[in-house]
Length: 424
Image 1 (cartoon, rainbow, N blue to C red):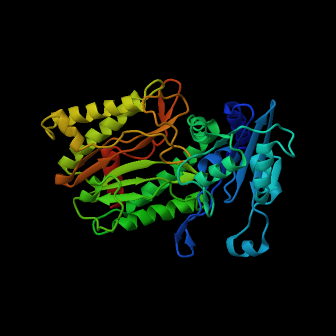
Image 2 (image 1 turned 120 degrees about the horizontal axis):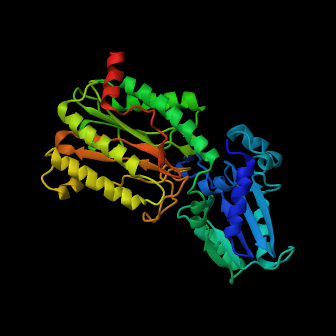
């Protein structure tokens, strides 16, 4: 678990980025409608969670910085015994304060008046505020019938001179380098993912449906994580299906001679493992499968050796393209290096964190720094051969290189074949 003092330190860091005479409002979000009277399962806004540790819907964080003072308020839903009979327990103010480290916990019905008094300077110890920070991520819901754009417009009605500033880049910048506590959360997620992958691999054989393997992974990781769920919808693709990067419908029956590509992960307290492994349905690689697999495996290892502070994701990508092109050319899988774009068409790396694709860097030319956690996922996809291979590890950038957090999840050809030999 992330300790309370870390959430307090994160808010202090965010306060340091705010201009004087400003306030910030962040929202946890609300469930989104699916169909009729059904809603999608609620997922808390990760920037709100990053600063508070609170996972509950209909909550808000108000930070005020003025005249050298900083004040913070957490606003939550009131206790409602009828709603709790239907939807479960809500946090009490005392519980919310204990989880977040915020002393001032109010009911969310007080937000409007608190914001109005802050904007106008009335009933406040501070002068009127002229700058407001909000997370302007598109489609963010503030309330069931209010999105973030609507809310910004309501602030401008209260104070036409208010300057709206985007808190999003500030927050994702803070999320970029992971603390030791965050890395520990990753390690737990990776350990559970390892257990799930081993069970999924044991399930794979000709005649089994792709979804049966995915279901086995889901069952095992939930058993071992306390029902914390997957990092993202599991990709489970066999044969030619594995040449589709985000294959969405695992309905095919696995056939003899297929390779099976798994892109999956467990999460722990929202920190997401993201791992890909590719294995033979028959337990043994064919010569062509082995050739292509070993090219991808070589690229995967080379990227891990290349990644270090000062490198950029753009540099990792260029390195990977050159490696794959050279190896495919030497094995006569392509006739010209330019052809590699037909068989490798995605990025080798992205940041990982509270989101699987952590939105911490739109700039792929920004140097990596110690504490960044990134993916290492080269692949090759030969549709005409019915072969798709992706091998993905999670890398922690250290002071002098990187640590492969997923190093204990098997990926060597002899390890994979030995795994199936032992079970069959």
